[in-house]
Every structure is written in C-alpha cells, then in structure tokens.
Length: 624
Ligand code: BF8
Ligand code: SF4
Image 1 (cartoon, rainbow, N blue to C red):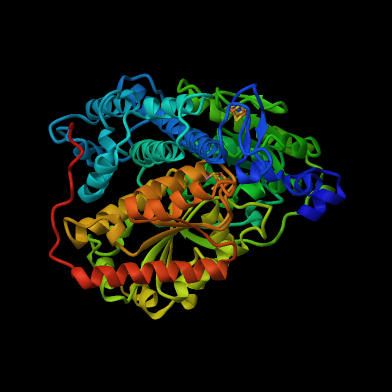
Image 2: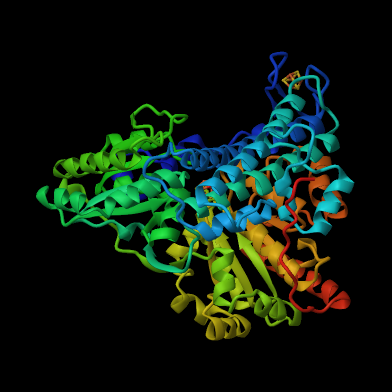
C-alpha cells in the first residue's frame, strides 16, 4: 500500500517522514524550551541555561511533565465523556443507550462502597456517575480510585507523597508548575509527573474501562480477523477510527441493520463491511467481533486501497494527513467529536440525542459513495489473520474456572515465568511492528504470558499471534499446558490503550490472590512499549512504573538531554517505587532484559512467600 500510495502520488506519514529527514536533536533530547517568549531556548554545552536561567534538568523534566499531562488529559477526557453518558442515561437523557452489563455496574458500585443490591440499575448508574465525576473535581483529598491498587502500593504512594488529588486539579497543576518561573527542581517536577500519570491509570483509564464495560458490555472471547485484507472489494467499506466506544458502538449497531444492508444491495454492493482502526477498532472487535484493519499506521493505507467509502473518526491518533490521503480517492472522512475538527473532514458531532438515527444516516451516505469508487484503482492486500480477542480480567478468570489461582500457582512455581504487557503505538521511524512481534514470540516461547493492548495488539493480530492455533505452537511448555487445560491462549488481547487499566486490574487481582499484603512490585510483571508516538504512552509508562511494574521502551523518551532526569526514571524510581524505566532499542535486548527482570522478581518472591488460600477481593474504594 505504501508503494501504491507513492505510485499514485498520495502522501502518507511514510512519505512525509522520509521528506522530513532526521528529527531535530533538541526536540528529541528534550532540550528545546518554548514555554515563554524570553526564548524559545535551546540548551547546548556552550549555553547550558535558558534566558530565564533554567538548566537542562528543569527543561527536560518540564517537557516530560507536559507530555504526561497531555497524554493523561486525553485518557481522562475520554473517561469524562463516558461518565457523562452514564449520568445522562441515568437521567433519561441518552436516547438509544442502555446498561448493557448490569453485573459490571454492580461490580464497579461495590468497589466504591455503594449499596448495590436493592436499587434499580439506573439509580445505581446515576450514583456511580456522581462518584466518578467527583474524581475529576476532588480538590483536597486523594482520588478514591487509587484504592484500585493493592494496599501496600497505596502506602508507598502515601509515603512518597504521590497520591493524586482530583484528575482535573492534578492536570491543571501540571500546567501551572511548568509555566515559566514556577517549579524548577527536576525531582519535584518528576514526582508530579508520576502523580499525574496515576490520575490517568487509576482515574481516567480505569474509569473509562469500567464505564465502557457497563455501557457496552464486558468483553468475552470473540473470534475475528485482522489486517488490511479485511476490506472487501464487493462491499461498502466503512472504517471506524479513534477511541470513543460510544460512537463506534452506534455505528456497529446500525451496520447490522437490515435497512442498511438493503440500501447497500440496491447500490450494487454485497453489503456493508464495517472494520476498525486503532483503539475504537479494538472496542468493537472486543464486543462484536468486528474485523480490525490495523493500528495507527494502517489508517492512511486503508484509504489507499481505494475501497473505503467512509472513515468515521472521533478523538486521538486520527492523523490530519488522512485528509490528503482521502483527497486522492472517493473516501469521505467524518469527525464525530465536538472537540475534533480537521479540514477535509465532515463534522457530524454525536451528542447523545438520536445517535442511532445519526449512525444510520451516516451509513446510508457511505453507501451512496459506493458508486463513485474507481474499480480500476482498488487494490486490497490479501493478508488477513485469524484473531481471538476479548480478554477482560473477568473473561480470563472465567476461563481459569472462576479464579486466578491456576495462574498464580504457575507463576509461583515457574511453569509460567511472568506476565508481560506489550503496549503502545507503531512508529514508522523504526521497522514498524517487527520489534513487537519478535518480542512477543520470544516471550511466549519462554513461557511468559503476554497481555497486549493498543497498536501493539494490532501488530500481534496482523502477525497471527492473537490466533491460538498459530500462537500456541510457538509457546513454551507452561503456556501450552495452560492453553490445553483452560483454553487460555499465550497472547491475551486486553483491548484499547485505556484498557491498560485491565493490566493494572489483573496485577492487583493476582496480588490479592497471592497474598493480601502483596503488591504489583512483588509479582513477575513487566511492560514493554516497543514503539511510541502519542503522549499517552509516556503517561502509561509512568503510571506502570509508579505501580511497581518495570517498563522497557523500544525508543528513548525525549529526556536524553538530562542524565539526571534519566537517572531518576531508572534508578531513583526503582528505590522509591520498586520499578523503573529501561530503554532497549532492539527486541533481543528487550527480551533479555524482560527475562532478567521477571526471573529476579520471581526469585525474590519465592524466597519470601508461597501462595495462600484465596481471600475476599478488595472493596477498599470507600470514601477516605
Ligand atoms: O491509544 S497505541 S497510536 S491508537 S496512542 Fe494511538 Fe498509540 Fe495506537 Fe489508541 Ni494508544
Ligand atoms: Fe527559555 Fe526559560 Fe522561557 Fe524556557 S522558560 S523559553 S528556558 S526563558
């Protein structure tokens, strides 16, 4: 598709990257400061301070905090929209929506200490929405959602002063601190970076995940297919792209309607084929088995097939360059979010009023574009791989017979050497997705269970690693036996990037099963982001480290300009939180480091504890 785009003169991120050449070294190292108009300042050996006197440590830490604040804001604002939808539904103002999973509602209500048994669903949904909205606005108390973490971890945060207050306050404070002339001690800035990330992991990402499950259903294992070969030459192809599960859910429901199928047939197509890209693609894959065309790097390439009638976007990771790609074909680009406008995209904001009708009208318009397709320019790659997705923690527990005990026992005796989250984006600056695929193969062959999210999961999907039939033969004996006995595959697709909260949930549940005093830092857990693009990934990395999970990055953070900041994130974080950031530029190095980290954690743990009987799950999220 990259070659086809080149031959047809259609620009993509690949061609623009080549035209840009090597990126600016000041930006790459974090040494460019443009927070005030005394500058912008660029730090060099000859000019070690900006005009205001800020040194490299301050500038690099400030830039990282701003990145993490922006990434956290994206996840948290996504969560806010989900919570507002839940609140509106409870108040009878969200026509066409319903509580899809009452058990998830009650589960979440119990976590926050709400009375859940003698109350109608909508009343409980309203109370829970109020509790969650208060997580955004809390001023002088820590977020209640921090109690999703094991008690030992919360104690570490308290001792280190990292307990985040309300989400909005924490993120606003991040921006305030980084204005010229406020916070200049890099350690103090980095502490707030971790605090801000915690507001994301346990606030925004966890709340978005729980609210999504309540409104649209908790994912269960579901079969599908992935890669650009999921597009069909004889059907009207519609792509949902972005992150908001409410929009993609409505489009998915409408796409299944007989009325739309009839319209498509009348237009000469065999039907409507809905596929997903990026995280909203994962949401509909998990809940409806809708095919996944790919991750962030496939968005323009899907259009280059010449076979996409409409791409329906919402927020985050929807490149503005899509407009240039679509201009070369008949594809209509639609933006459904009130906060996202791009020239070349038709604004069609979904506002909770008649979203079903809105979705049907959009699909009818997509059908009308089918006749404008230029058949001679259609080229759909044949590659498609089978996928098994839908691994919420509840689904994992279900497969394991109702408890995580079989997994905990195997982690304790070494039949399974650990659980590795492979997360984050695909980046055209590196050999896209090869790192992720090689690492996943290496890990499962060494009996490390892989938990995948985001574009890294899309990479695994395209490589066939989300197909048990293809992945199990590549796995070690421990994982093969686990699959044989429980049908739990070696690579578990946990969902979108906000669903990294499922990894935190899995870690907390494993810790509770292992020993009431255990913590994520005591478990053989590790995370790798092979390739990162979005500011959301440094935010995820920081909340994982703050949770006690070592994070291996396949590319440097933009912090190499300050050895002190890098030492804080690797060594000091380890002393403070039991985990740090590692950078391994090649997959073999990452695999070696991951195995070292997992084995040393298991050895440490084995020296101290063996698994004990199951205990009640935590319900510690009551008001402080
Ligand atoms: O949130 S992995 S490119 S799609 S940021 Fe974006 Fe990165 Fe993909 Fe979803 Ni996540
Ligand atoms: Fe330069 Fe300081 Fe202004 Fe940054 S804050 S641009 S270092 S003067």
